[in-house]
Image (cartoon, rainbow, N blue to C red; front, side, top):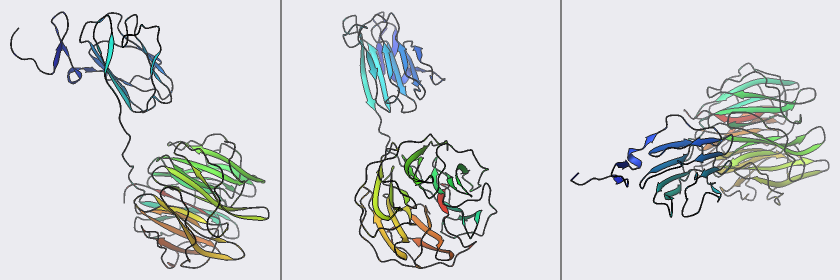
Length: 420
């Protein structure tokens, strides 16, 4: 054999062994708990449901190569475990435990010799640094007009509210809603003669589905927000006693069992996402007390203890995300009378002091983001109203827009759709 060979390494036998570019990649994603790997192969390992033990070949030649990739970014939850099958791994015998536990990791190993055995030539985690596309449209739903209703009103990407759509599901008030899964929404819980725990999913066309039997304690006067880029948390409310418990919702809209609450139990608070992947609960009331306190939520859905509130204590407030870097706004509410003030929230979860309100003072409003980087507050109680107020991408609240649809309060709103 003569001439230059590139992008290859030699086996001890003289047979050319391929590098990464020439690997044979398994077409099937590995989801099982075990894998017997072969040299010159690459494997996508999905540990969403369980850890996976990869057994390496029992015999190997210099230059043999295997690549393993964290397919679902779950190695930090369920580890990848290496069984070197009698050969050394980085100079240690296979009696040592070798596992990889970093999300987004990929591992390329090459066999050297009997002394060092298998050696990683790359062992890197790829950052998950992209941002999901922003929510463009929104939906207001359910509420109270003197009796509970299930009507909805869609909002286009320019903030224009559409006429009533005949509701689907049980009419109720005091519920909460949030976007989930990137382009869908969920309404959950509420009051319909008694507290309920049912939910209604909304697809990316704004179509509301029939009732789904709820998980967790039935309650109303709660709040909900997105977290972790595509999941939801419902929290607090009346059960009929005051509650601080929460329920997480997966990115496929599945509600989990109750999580014991953190922070002061209260009702008629608001919640919103902020930053790129976190959430905040704020304000609300409990017997004899009106609050301005907040509770931050991590990107894994863990609620933090109370943060001393900033701004006027109130309940029946609304909240939504706005801006290109994940700011948020709380606005309106009630404390010895209806209010129109607002409080901006930075993309690190810091609440600012009161801003004098614009528009009709009211409470029991709903709010959500729309148009990629803006927000809308709608409806509310002072009597019952159908007006809305748009919020710019710098957090400036606009004057009243005459409402479309049935005047009501105690409703909920959420963003949906990534298509304008």
